[in-house]
Image 1 (cartoon, rainbow, N blue to C red):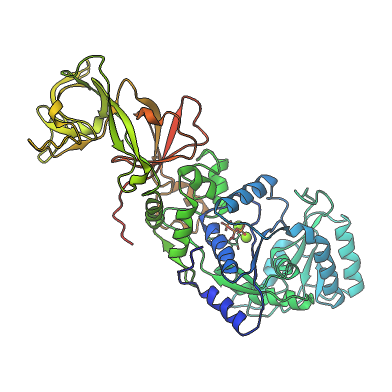
Image 2 (image 1 turned 90 degrees about the vertical axis):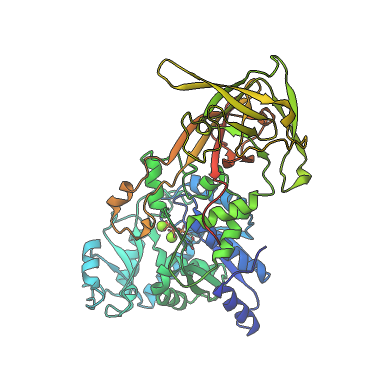
Length: 551
Ligand code: ATP
Ligand code: MG
Ligand code: MG
């Protein structure tokens, strides 16, 4: 696959192979199954699978399932589906929970080496004793328990003799270390909870900082790639691998996580949007989840091209969402059939067109990709145009329909607005127009010119369709810089979804979920897989045709 972007991690791996530090490459993508994957995870997936692939290596999909309280098999299944959809195939599928026995044994080893102890302090006390950036921590009064006592208490913890929070196992490192992560981090805690994989076999669970390096080492991972927030944890990562006497030594590398404008990406916040009913599920087309992007109509090709373009670096930063939109347009330009659809219908009667007559006009399916062939569009006495393409009293330089004005109907004829029909409240409900048979599209007519070209749909053959137009769900450009929880829900755009009942060309009546079209003047749309039923077509707007954004 694509490899032509800046990526310092690839250079490290290349050097490790050249110098003989490694003779093979194993990476892993390690999601916690506590939510659905989002576009940030896609960056990590593409990086991990991409570099391994480039150097003939392997990539594991590993579920980092060490916290039973938040994890669920629904998330496991969605994550597998999303990784596959993005175009990747793991070499091994692993669960961290399958290593719980070995992790327990390694913890016992630390106790035996006097490098771990059972602490009775509660969470608040531990935090208090930990100190701050400017103040050293102080030792817990339980730090000097004997090895025998620690072994005995740890076994009792495992056997369920204590309640949640009553005791923890801590690594014994250095309470005065300038790196707070090394001030005797908690490595095991008690959680009497059902685990999606191990059931009730365990009531103690390893903490991320202890479990993750062990998982990497057990699997023989060579390059363990994570995001920058974990940079300060690297010394602890190395301590765990070394002191637990792991045979294989993985190395951690950090890169800058992806942030997008007007997008929140933390799974916790996305879950809140789902739980509070702000969106219709993890796969709502406004969500930055992989399943949301899929349902909106983004393609794996566009997401991959986007991730390669933005590259991998050590820097923090926020990428304009328009960059992603640029890549979906690029991908769909030649693939998506062109069509016409009316989102806000206004009926037009063509008074000089014979009643009962229908003619079928030929139109290219995609003028930029002629191999896609042609389609047939019916034309008759009654058609729909957009309400927004008519003005009774237009400003200067308005070239669409108004009384007395002539426009071109795409693929059909010139029509001229002769009469405006209104209802009792004065709303325009219909236009009476005439057409000129000599102006037929493709006939080579040059007699006179018109400035406006409108899209339209034949009224007697039109297929009803529901159009769903989207605006960003989050109003703030850089919502991730928001520190306070409470402000996040206040940033939600109340107008992020607009639903319109319109019509499409009759040749679209059999289109399937996930089919993508480019609508003349409206942009790209995807057939919604959730709400589309037999006889009810729902189209999600993917992107508008143009943006001001230039790459
Ligand atoms: P979140 O903070 O959104 O809940 P997480 O980091 O807790 O995400 P994990 O399931 O642990 O989610 O993530 C799996 C992998 O994806 C990790 O290696 C993590 O570093 C990476 N990842 C998560 N978010 C991003 C992001 N925004 N950009 C790049 N990589 C990411
Ligand atoms: Mg995580
Ligand atoms: Mg998280």
